[in-house]
Length: 254
Image (tube, rainbow, N blue to C red; front, side, top):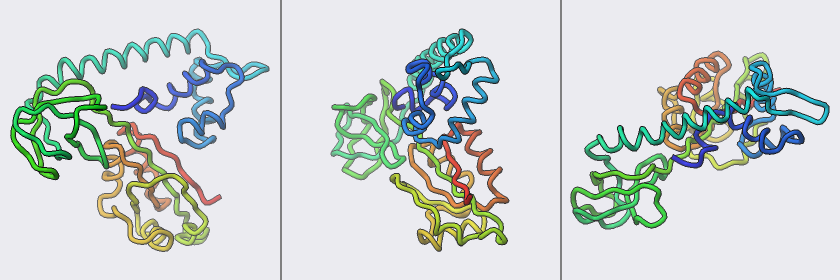
């Protein structure tokens, strides 16, 4: 997995950021740092205040004693979680299958990392996880890796969702008004209006059939996904993303 900021939930990230910069932290700076919308920051801050983890003073936001304890508890939880993965999960899996990025020989120690959503086996330098090849493999071949140690560096991807409104409010034509500046690994369309909007703006999507589940799966493997979604399908897509704990933002037409 990647940095701690990449794997904890959004509310905890915001809580830590407020604690680091209180009381003068700006919501726009938080949004920029974590790649989410200012609206998402505002909604999460409202929840944190309601839960008693933040309070608002004349100069800005402060973390309450309950909020400090929340940070301590979650930090300990994540530490124990990683240690449990190492002791009780990785060490009990007989092998992982990876794609060889270098010529591999049986018994060779390799570095493991995620690239393009796929597990790769390459040079052990600069890799946070390592393992031993169980066979020879040429570049591009699959190879089984045993004796895994370390944590595979895999930060979850992010999903940007464009809500396609009803036909009477512009329908698929709204795609022409939306710009996305960040790198996109995959495009997807959910619902027929979403498919038409994607075709008008970016061409044929990479994902359409089964896209709601595939988007979450791709993002969990570190890919950034851009989605045009029909307004009637939006809640189902959001439910799928939240169930998988995927960071997402929604771009509306208004």
